[in-house]
Each structure stands twice: as structure tokens, then as C-alpha cells.
Image (cartoon, rainbow, N blue to C red; front, side, top):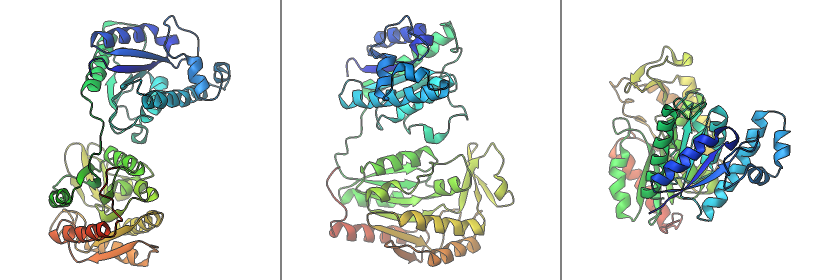
Length: 413
């Protein structure tokens, strides 16, 4: 791409000098800048390509109505709605190749909505005074979002501010030049897992699925990976999902920040995508290893994976809660679902002698599974560990059966 078209979203009324500098830097990097004004206070000295009045109109209101909406929060929410709709339209029409949005807390709040309106693979960068802050909930961030801290950028075009602006401009233009939006030339199986020290079935399943004509996309279930998985599943981009790592669901239930949001385990099912599911790693709640153990699990065994993330074994009652939640979510599926329950353990640290081995908890999970209403969900109790070859072989048996019945399509989406 010789001259990428970058949509710059910001408040022209308060950030005209900064946005003008960004436009210059994007041009210097070989790109083209299209300016969208989402400010509501006044008309700035910079003439945007898309005015704030047009943004308001896309939200179904006038700019005067936005300004009279009550407060800055309600005003910016309306502008976020209009901006998101316009961005989707511009992308569908092929008029933009990437997004660069900038702001403080107000601008970042709006920017997250606008970035989320673009599909996975489209470069999207937010230049923010609160980049990487705990103020930003994971469920608000697109899985492929890039962020640059706007150091010294709250007011005035100083040298620190210029440095951040130039870096952001170069990053988004470069990303647009080399971006490869997923093409899905072959049917894709979406799979969830953790690192191979905990779950490793993907090592054996990948070559087997490739021989059957399928690509395998494995998503790391540490929050953002699960969000990307659910988003693509809900769009129907997978021929089948093998959702074997579900601790993001348990994390959400346990109040952990390592969450993929409240809709985990729903995207594929509601879309009717065939699902093979296992309760991998549902005996764990993850937490930042640099922080305290969640209070509910303070006396439970823990495993520190690295300096970023640690896991604590959940209690027996939560194992039963997990079984009930799995049944509740899987019953909502509109396509075929097969749940495989490994009776000898559900992650590598759940083996005899390993730090999180909990036979009482696993027994409680299995017992509660037997008490639940699964509706049309097929269920297999497998006398194996989730990391055993027997688990892989059973998964392939289910997959091949569905393939023979035509329940799994070999056509690309």
C-alpha cells in the first residue's frame, strides 16, 4: 500500500494544533490523513474533513441537541455513537485503511468505541493520556488495539507531545502498509488454550486438522485472546470451535481482571457454529502475580506462572457453580455441541503430585455435571486426562463424525 488512508479522530475545538501536527506527520510518513471532528464545544481553527455536525447527525441528533444533552458524558456518548457509525461506513466503502484516535479520558472513552467498530485486522491506534491504565476495562478494548501513551499531551504542542504524536503517526501508517486482514481462504477451526506447560492438545490436533483441509487458529485465554475468539465465532468465521480452555469464564465468575467479559462461551453457540467443548483449566482463577490473591481463595493452593500471572485453585463449591454455568450457556447453542469431560484431570497442574491436583474438586465437578440439565448437548465422560492422546483421539472422532454428516462445512466463510 503506497499511501495508506488514515482516519484521525479527535476534538478539533481543543486539539487543533495537535491534530494538524498529526496530519503533517502522517503525510511525512507517506500516508494520507482524513480528519474527523468529535468535539462539541466550538468550531476549532482547523477545518476537518468530517465535521462534528456530521458526526452528530450520524447519531440521529443535531449538534445543538448533543450540547444540550445534559453533561459532557452524555454528549460524548452521542458523538461516540455517530463516529462509530461513520467509521464503519467509511471502512465498508474502502475509504480508510486505518484509524488513529487521540484524547484524554473523554477522547479515549470515545476512541475505544470507535476502534471497536472496526473488524479484526484493520490497524487501529489510540494515542491516550491514560494508555495502559487500569481505568480501561479489557472488555472495552478491541483485541488488536495498539496504544501509545500521550506523555505531556494534556495541553500544548511541546516537544514531548510532538514525540508521542510522531510515533503514533509512524506506527499507524506502517501498520497500514503491511497489514494483512484475515482472508479465510481455507475453513478455520477456532481453538482456545493456554501455554503448552498447562494445556497442549493443540500440538497433536493441528497436523490432524491440516490433513483434513482446515486451518487452526489457537487463542490464548488470558482475557483479550478470549475476546478475539468470541468476536470471530459470533461473526461465523469458524467452521467449528474446539473450546477447551475456559478459565476466562471462571475468572469472570470469580471477579478476576483476567476476563474476556460476560459473553464467554456464547458467541459460537448463538451463531450455530459446531462446538466441541471441554472444561479445561476451570479449576483455576487467574490473578496478577504482583497483586494479592483474591480474598475468596486466600487459603487455596496457588501456582505462580511468571511475574505477570498466577493461578489459584478454586474451592469445591465453585467447581459446582462452573458446571451449572456451563450447562446454562451450552443449552443456548443453536448448533451441535459435544462436551467432553476428562475424568483424570483438566490441566497439567491437575495431575497426581502436581501443585494444583484436587481430586475432591474434580469429583465435585463431575458429580454436578451429572445433575445438570444439558438439553440437546452430547456429553462424554472420558477416562483420560485432557493432555492425553486419548482426549485428542476422541475429539477427532467427534469432529470426523460431524464432518461426515455435513454439520461442519469445508467451505471458507
